[in-house]
Structure formats: structure tokens, C-alpha cells
Image 1: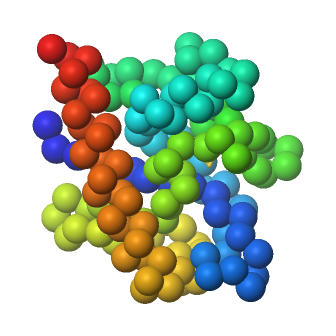
Image 2: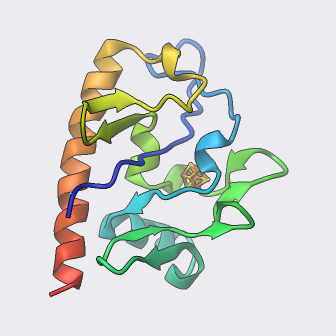
Length: 145
Ligand code: SF4
């Protein structure tokens, strides 16, 4: 099965940071299909959440974030922030850098802050996206054995 595409995040970096500036619009946390690695799941469980609350598995063995009323389980609609920010999935940390199956590593065009990302940040996160999806693919295949 091909690698899934959607890698999302809120990057709440300060203006002087070398990282992109997130506007907290919440678009990337709406109807999320963010894939999770085992490591992501363990980290979020350690912070007090039960796997059943925030994970769904598809028929191919992929784990992804569960939505609640149209938003990621962890998205706080009052504060417009991620309630699990410090333990958020690796895919959320590298967003808006995603893998497009036809084009390769790109910036997700639904992200209004994508233009604040530098080439070096995009390259660094792109490598992480590839590695992360390899791990997630392997874990999904193991679940289906
Ligand atoms: S875990 Fe946090 S950053 Fe990731 S999609 Fe959910 S609310 Fe957004």
C-alpha cells in the first residue's frame, strides 16, 4: 500500500524562531487523517489519554487520529490550540511539510502559514516525513500479518 499523505501540525514558534509561524487557524486540525506511529501512541498514553479515545485503525492496519465533532480529538475549539501540544504526533510536528505521492515533498497548500517556512526547514522536515512514513508503513504491515 502507498504511503498516506497527510502530515499536520500546529507549530507555535515565536517570531524570531527559525521555524515557521503558525497562525493557529485550526484548518490542519479539522477532519484530520493524521497517521500515528507506535511511539506517538505511547507518548500520548503516557500523558493520560486512553488509546481508545484518540486512535482509530483502518482496514490496512494504519493508526490515525480520531476526530470528534469534525475536529481532531485533541483540538480545543475554545482556545484554538492543541490540548496535547507537547506530546503531539510526529506528523503534527513536521506539518505543513507532507509527502505528495506524485510530486514528493511539498508544503500543504491548505496551510495559510506555509510561506513562513524556510527552505532549510522544509528540507529537514521532509527527511523526517520520509522516515516517519517508512516506520508507519512497517507498523501497519505488521498489524495485518
Ligand atoms: S494532535 Fe494537536 S496538532 Fe495534531 S491534529 Fe490534533 S489538535 Fe492538531
